[in-house]
Image 1: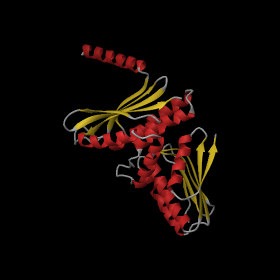
Image 2: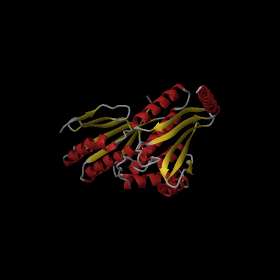
Image 3: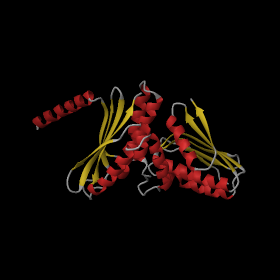
Image 4: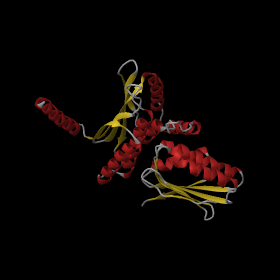
Length: 126
Length: 187
């Protein structure tokens, strides 16, 4: 499968999606004005991945900030992985948050209330 | 002409004094675009990072500013139908106990009751209630043509932990001016 490797900007996140090496990561900040335009390619990639996913997928979210329009797209991404879980594969969401940022932890907890995927919360402090 | 110039200088000085007295750090009136949003948030981010403000407060101010500005760039109406620019006024003030982010924009009168209802509903909820509403809304919402998900106000209320204060001033039978103040406590 094609590898997605997008470098972040001051309003879009870094994205790495690599089936072969098992790297799945969205990090940085996400506040684009047009979320659909930015995430379309990513959602399409995940749709294709879900046709033949790895036995275990570890998806890292290490976001510093995202706007509410992005929060909706993140849910869409998680729902796609929930389907992969329903189809019998293992998925773990690694949700990273800064120790000063309870809001980011809470955002992760809210997602885990909505989707049936196990979440690991990882605190960092750099 | 000379008199007009004097008047303007006097106005600039009065504005400066008013801003100082009210501890206003930033005022902008004009079109609100993604570029403007990025510029203001990064200016604010830089000035906050030089201050002794905690990371938590810095992040909240940044978050709330983005949502407020994107609300204007997505939802503001114009004074007349010929104008398509989404304009607004943005102010940031820093008091002893809190930061206030004040935004104002034109809204069509027909949209006022719906917005008022949302604001009242949000203000009636506590933290857990806001979280429930957010989860419900994020599941049901779709990204609109404008790129919004209808979650901005709920998010502001959640992150600030303060009630949203707002006012509608009717300008004529078509439009009103909507003012929203978001307060972020400093400790």
